[in-house]
Image (cartoon, rainbow, N blue to C red; front, side):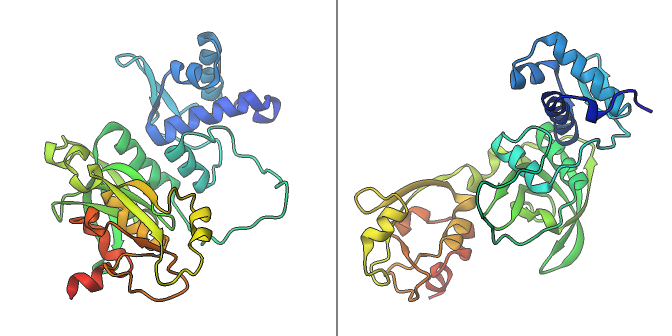
Length: 297
């Protein structure tokens, strides 16, 4: 049994050890310099932190003498309990590194997000594969084919405003696709090299940046200045740069009318995509309001 207890540590110590665990669990490695850079401590203090974490989780890290870094142990078992959303925030935005704590809100507030169940052990397999640029085998529940096994080469996490996805190359379809994290039942690392055509550099939709122009809906909005103020528009237009792979999600989330003649009716359509031609060839625009119907026509 460990001679050191979390309850006996200061909050700053717990924060640093939680950071060690996050790096090990979801990236698979940590260096002393990671602690030095993140917390502004001396190298000797970082060494002590790693030693303290080893006391808490003796099997959680091993030292790689060749790489001169600590790596995730084969028998890793978490010391800290992190909410899934906290982990995703850290992975995607680079803050919230410390130990999770219950914070009291300064005022009454609530949200409308649906509760989801995300397996953090499964997520850690994906994030380590992203970090190391390797492939994984997943058991995935698709709406069209049900539960099936796939081999993917993941390279990024993406939040579409409603659900988190992992973006990667799907070896079964031979294309780059999004996989909903909560539909992945299991994930296992795969040995072997990744081919050049499976890497992020080859994902045209991910690397293409589209410049879109959103304006108040000409037919549904009686007071355009209200929408202009709400979205911080300049001269009546909101200009944005967005990945092609994320464009359809954005249009759907914001209820952007993507018809050529702004013909969608309804109080929910406050915005119109003025430069529809800028998104020509974007594959996931089938999700955008009004886009698919006009393409079929």
